[in-house]
Picture 1 (cartoon, rainbow, N blue to C red):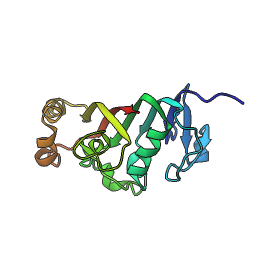
Picture 2: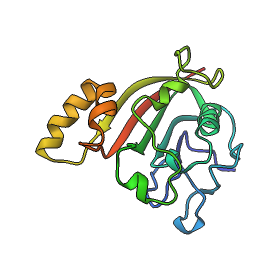
Picture 3: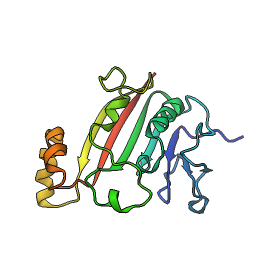
Length: 175
């Protein structure tokens, strides 16, 4: 039996990553493992991965909390988790019929161990980095600096005037 790679790419679509176990529900994209990410548990062992990627996946899932618990289960202690998702102000979040969620800058605080909003059990993460990403352009460069410096004000007041493209998160698994 071939050993599993130590890196996992969940919901790979056509963006497969080399040296990763690429998982997607669509067999037509030829992932290493065909599996619907809304069906738990995933057919993978506990504490197996030192790096997990979920690029443009979370917004499609039925249950974000269950997904994060599954990521925590699959990750080794101190594993790095990389997530991208469209920002709730992004026009694509409202036109893609498969999107179920529109997430914001603080959405993953609900999974941070010990955080005041960590309502979902003992499955802990630490946010290492997060940013609001905008499409390239001079005005968006200025807006990006302001939005990432004051994200709460951006999301409350500016998001609909200067919509972001997507959110980027780097988390560390706390076990």
